[in-house]
Image (cartoon, rainbow, N blue to C red):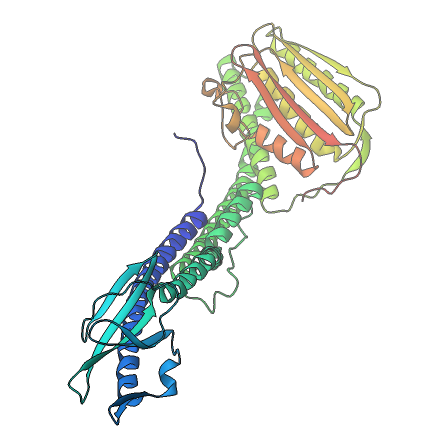
Length: 465
């Protein structure tokens, strides 16, 4: 996968919108400026011919065999200079603009463009026949360079404004895209929140959706509808698990009671006694599974309340370790357990739930220990937390399985599925720790062992319900 600058959807759409608008604007400006240039030059030519023709009609007359010029003839209007020549190109009257030193030949009725000293000029000659039979020529001269200079000022001004226009276009595009993608952002945030706290009651609830009806807003409504259905499905599932667990507790209790009654008899054949012991073992495993299911069902429904109090964890851990040591001795697998606890490690915990948490971890370590293995339990106060670690040198957990071990019904070692571990213990442990405002983590090396460490606040904190 190539690594580089990551552009979000908003960034890509904004860039696309901005580039498109800039291209359209530049193309429109180029066309307008090109047309404007032609229009300006055409306007200069038209103005030149009109000025010369108007002056010929109004400013020049022939009286008593002599030419008479009106005073307006010498007035420079619209940057147009007028001059009068004879047939030999001899200047009779008028003005010539500064910088125009050339004396081009006469050309009646034709607008010509001439270059001289780095400047461009329009020249227009108009012949005027006199009563004496002679002909004079009225010449109009105007600067093309000056007219184009005005146009270049406009072009420069446009180029100066263009960057600001690009920025304004980008800002408008970004705001438009952000508003259009707001439901997508809210959908993403809602999904992340649901993944964080597993709360299916959250909804996108796109603000102002009543005033907006588009595809993305409809997507937000559809997503909310899907969450409604999922919440209903999970609520029914939780209720089903709770109801089934309650209903099964009675027959399981009856089975265990009957097993105790049979074992109390003295004349039970060995074969029947073995069968009863097998039934009792499975029934007790089923009873433990039902107990775990009921526990998780209450946590899902928010019906499990914590009753925290400030307790010294050291004696609780030592007592739990002693109980587990007796069970390990009875199992006869040669697994030993040791406890190293600091004195007076206090924390605010629910004592019953804390013992359940610890016994789950100890039971898990014992179940996955090797023959003649060892379990080490440590308790210490660190950074304002009570930190407990349960470490074993058992079979370990594969690295690809570590991220999933706190999921319900997940078992890293499926070969031991029938030994009373349904994959709920670590889920319960995680919930208990987090309900106390703490944390839990697992470290493991396959074939070498595992370590489960959790930390609980030593001082008052807000507990999750």
